[in-house]
Length: 296
Length: 310
Image (cartoon, rainbow over all chains, first blue to last red):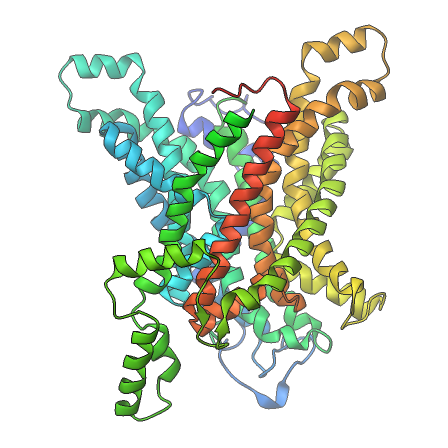
């Protein structure tokens, strides 16, 4: 059944998947307008990133000093930048940086956050106190400030920017997973598993971990746009991706001085960041509607 | 009340030590310290090595880390943030007036954010699920998706270049207008969401139903019975939002050339001027913690339901 049909004739036509299951959640998500818009744009970004060399009309790094700061035209859809590179092609290749940043930052925050959260929520009281005091300390910093402090320690570059954004996100994930672990551990079926002789580690892996998936997806949809926005801000401040790389934040800072003469060179990467983040937030809104148990 | 304040202050103490430790790390873990960063590739190797050794000794970089940390902590508590290696003068001299500039910017931005965000959230809640609500919430979502640095440039483009309402290089109060507006409008988005959800929650309560059943008009119900509770809920998050504003100021100050600690902080990180970086991050974190402390105390003072002994 195509997407359009499923909108026109909802649920009754298809056999209802089990309420609360993943297929049911997926079906609800596909019917959610904000998730559909956000998801489509993100799929487009994914497509551009995967097939950038074929989608892009020009070489994103090709310098043409005779065609500097050209306004948008048929050959250069979004014009050219301060050294004559095609902006549209650079935006298309920029999707790779954008997704890479999201992926690496979320992997670092999520990976370490889940590990620390499970140890704090499922392990000894000492480990819990120690980990929670550390997260308290890190959360006492405003997010951007924490990111900047980590960049100051590691030194500015694209990789350290991604690492910094990732590390700064760890305490949030750790707290979330810990709270889920503490709630799940009080459930009766966990008591039953313990009575049957399951070890703490088994209980955590078999009961706690699966229960974290739904809140984790919701939290991911909050945290990832913030991480991506911060990484772009770092590039803009000259503390992230560096000059020739077609990273959106870096493109913006390089063309910034031409705001008065060639506004399109500034608007294009800025709008790209904005649209990408907005779609992530739209998809996130949809995910929350579907996965947040309070609304079901 | 005074016991509550004392307890809150004591609770903040470990956090302060933690922040000191983290900012101390800025100079302790780095692979090349500030001295070698400054002399890199400028003089012959022998000359550089000699100068580096002399500078290391002068700034105590040759001591073990715990000695350095204790000395660092003691100095900071006395208001001595060391000397900026790049600017070649005490950090405290440079930072003072810049901190005032940043506080002015964030203060005005906060007022703009509250002035726009809170009424927007309240109207959304009062007209829940109408086109007005959906519209306001969409604007809010656009606001949280907007990169601050792009929004700032956009405002310059529209107001200074196209409409020419504001000079491109403004002076005096006009210089504050665009950066504060940028920061404030971006801040209005999360504040409107908080105000909306607080108001919706309060409008479901019994005392609101009682007021309505007594025949009170919807406007008075909202203004007299729902607004105080909503403002209280908004107030609790303003402490946290102040930290966001400070972080946002780092970016906004760079765009508008506002001479605050954020603009200097970004330069300091690029220069690898660690004393300066440490001081700026420490002061910003300190301001954030103080703001939260202040909000907590103010909250306990305004709301008699808060139990001081808990």
